[in-house]
Image (cartoon, rainbow, N blue to C red; front, side):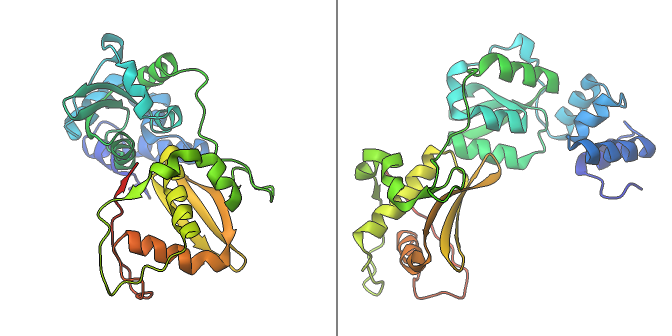
Length: 276
């Protein structure tokens, strides 16, 4: 049996669409080239696109779609950045009430589907389509000059890293219209957080929204407090702060999340609701 077989590989093997020798060879090539297993199997000729699409459609209950016969609603492209579409090999195609229909090569990619749900704020309805058709559609419909969001450059030379004083310039006047909604009024929870820290946290959140980030990481080290965003699945440094701001920053986030700021040992779960 092949070692480290992906779920797709296991399913194709179980369905007898490929042999164990073919799967082992595909895995070897995949590790060398860093491509999706499905792409490698097609390239090696062990599967054809029609067979793979039919299998994925049945396995994941995702209707197959022929993009050459379907008109893409180009107004939806603004919901999913070009880099995200290209990375996950997907494209939004139409709206269905409160749902967003997408065509994707790999309907088992839950990370991609979760990212689309986060970016669009809509329920995601998945269709499976041929890899070549999706790649062609991405290049056909997306604006050619669209590039990844840049968040500035720090004085220390790190690419795409802002210093604290540059944050206001990036966010602009949008911060003035951003407020916390339904902040818990707990008399036992101290509120003595300086206004600059409040504005800083709001700025970090606003910039993350503008950058289409799915996660925000606040990471203290011995000398600096680094803020990183996960954009298109990749963690990118965006902000450097004095490490002495760690306690004030985390306290503000805890207050906004309705958490106990005195608890520093146990994990806590909370939610921030913003209006802007």
